[in-house]
Amino acid sequence: MHKAGLVVFAFGCPSTIRSNVMLMDGAIAWHAQYGGPIYTQEDIDLPNIGQFDVKYIGQLPDQPPSTLRIAREAIVWARNCCLEELHIRAAAPHMSRCLRDLAIAKHEQRSLVSLVESSYPDRIPFDDWFCPDSTQPRVRTFHDWEGREKILRVMPVWLYKLIAS
Image (cartoon, rainbow, N blue to C red; front, side, top):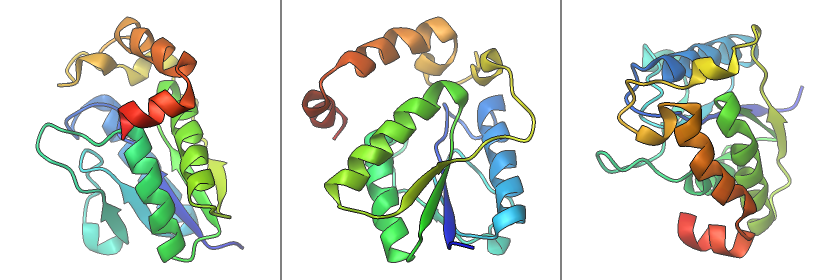
């Protein structure tokens, strides 16, 4: 088996909202299967941190890092951990951008790590990822999310990299 690690992208704030609890549960299930290290954000609050090899990305209060910044730092982390595979957990609405940003970061750093979309044992309905109680308005509803995502999807990569850096 290849040496694998997991990157978990939060979907909103705080750690107690439904989407982040589902992502945390997914990280725990992944760890039970693979046992590898995990790279994530503070809003993915893994219990009993001593049993997990977890690296949290640095962030300022109320200023979550951009998806591209997480991706770039995750690729460096994967190289430093000598990982061959990087599994990705993210909310369904966020997954395509997470994969795109990881591919950008992988290309920038000439990394050979394989990116693997980590699927969920039970299909979670798309709308269940949105949380009206999130402190980040963009993840409260599909409408809030999609308005911003449409712009980010059509934006040229050079401009996206400039804005997200």
